[in-house]
Length: 307
Length: 81
Image 1: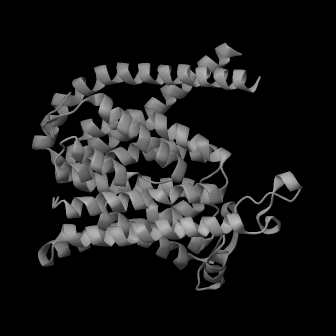
Image 2 (image 1 turned 180 degrees about the vertical axis):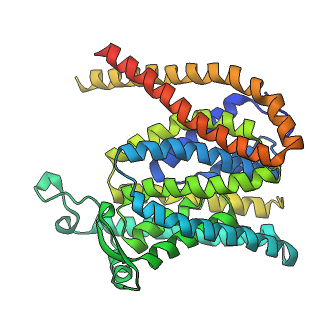
Image 3 (image 1 turned 90 degrees about the horizontal axis):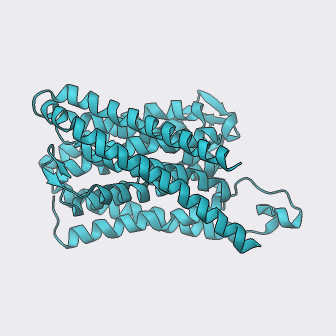
C-alpha cells in the first residue's frame, strides 16, 4: 500500500502485526510501546521525522482501547489521573523546549540517546531486582491463598520509599481512596507526572516506562491501578504530542490508522491478561522491555544512525 | 479432560481472532483508500486542520473499531451458549 503523505510503500499486514504486538505489550504493561514501534517504522523505510509523530498518533489510539478496558476492570484512578494531567502537560512542554535548545548547542541524537540508555537500563535492572526481592519475601508478608493467608493485592519490596513520600505533608494534602492512599501531598503527585511528561517531551513516546514504575515505587499506587492510570496519562501526553507534530507536518495519519487496527485487538488482549497476574509478576515481566529499548538505541548510535 | 478443554479454548480464540482479522481486512480495504487523497490535500495546504482531523480520526477509529469488534464477539459468545 502506498502512503502519499510520507511517500512510502509498506505492506499493510506488516503494520497491522507490529500494531498487534505493541498493543498486547501496551495493554499489559501500561506503556505506549514507542521503543518498539519507532524502530519498526524506521525499518519499514518511514523517514525519521514521520516516525516520531506517527508513532505518537498510533499510541493515542492504542492507549484509548487499553484504557477503556482497564476502566471497565476498575484499574483507573480518575482523581489521580486528573491531577497528573497538569504535571504531564507542563513536563511535556518543557521537554519539547529542551530539545529545541539542545538542537542549537549539541548533538541531539547523541545526548538524547545516551540519556535514554542510562534511564532505560536503570529502570530495567531496578524493576527486576525489586520484583525478585518481592518474590523472596516471606509468605506471611506476601500473602498466599493456598496456605490460607490473606492474598495480598500488591506487594512491594521497597514500600518504605512510598511511605516516606506519603509522610511529606506539604499542603494541599489529598486522599486517593481508589488507590488506597489516605493522604499524600498534591505536589508529590504533580512532581511524578511532571517527570513523566518531561521524559515524554524529551525522549519521545508516552514515557510509560518511567511513569508507571514511579507511580508504584514513589507514590505507592497498586501496580494494576498504576498500569491503567498511566495509560490514561499516555493518551494526554501522546495526544498533545500528536497535534504538535501534525501541525509541523510530521504525522502520516494513514500509517497510524492502519497500525492502530492491529493494536486495538492487541491492547484488548493485553489489558485482559492483567487479571491473571499479580503486581510483582507484572513488574518482573516489565523489566526486560526498557532494556530492549536501550539496546535498540545503543545499536542505532553505534551503527551511526544519526537521524 | 484438561487437554480437551484447552483445545476447545484454543479453537474459540482462533475463531475470535479470525473475526477480528475479517473486520480489520474489510476496514483496511475500504477506509484508507477513501481518505488518502483528502488527507494528503489537507497535509499539503491546511496543516492546522490536518492536525485536528488526524487526532479526531485516530480517536474515532479506536473507539469505533473496539465497539464493532466487542459487539461481534459478544454475538459470537451468545451464539455459543
